[in-house]
Length: 208
Image (cartoon, rainbow, N blue to C red; front, side, top):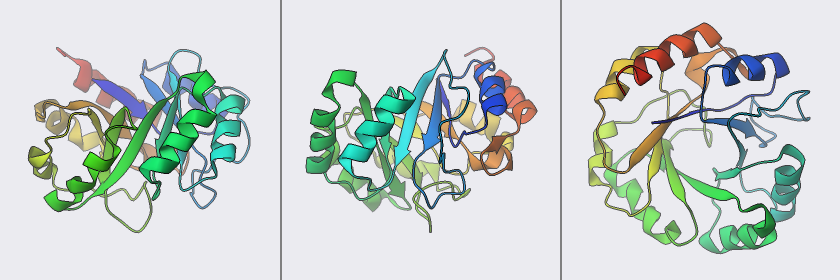
């Protein structure tokens, strides 16, 4: 199972979280986010993928961030159209980036839009529909995902907390390849609780 930790920006915290053996670390480039990475941290992870999270950003800004941060993954949380994603792909083609489209979920009907993105993305991230594009700290009913019949894999997101380790281990969905952890593992916005993450990851990966 892929474990992604999102909303990072403090160099020491980045080092500590990376040392837990996670697969991907996310950096939020949306200025309105409490976890906005306004400047490049003094340290960036070397042993896991780097994901950039964007909300309706200009393709040129995404390309610049991808170059500056050495991104491997572009995660789009806004109202980006398939055509706009194709434009970003073309602009960043030299980097061979992977593209993840976040889909806000409340009911099975919300899954309907995934078909439009299957030809331009590599995976989806299913997050809770809320006031913000992400980081709301709330969960949706995971059983809604029983209705997902798309061809792309997905990451489960939305308010996953340290208390959800056993639920995650028991969760079954053919296309689920991992989880995205953020606000419920924080001591402050952008600062992760490393002991809580460590315990959670140990449970998840025990007998995986």
